Length: 88
Image (cartoon, rainbow, N blue to C red; front, side, top):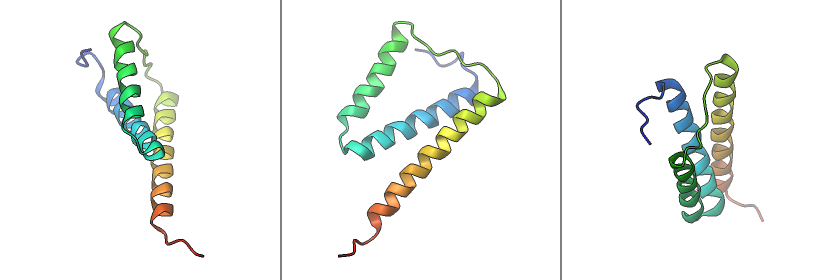
């Protein structure tokens, strides 16, 4: 699938959101298999013609940014809770 016809900002935000989700998926499962299979299923669906059409609107950008911020906050919270010593 060629990405040359995509507008830059939606593509960038989507890529960051998708990579954040795959990172979270790996962090939750500690396995590469599920993120790889999920990525492959997205690629396969795009290959057979199932694509999301992005409409430029402020609400779409706000939603995407809020998902990205929430994802990073959840990853950061999980990382800091794993680094704290456990009390007995």
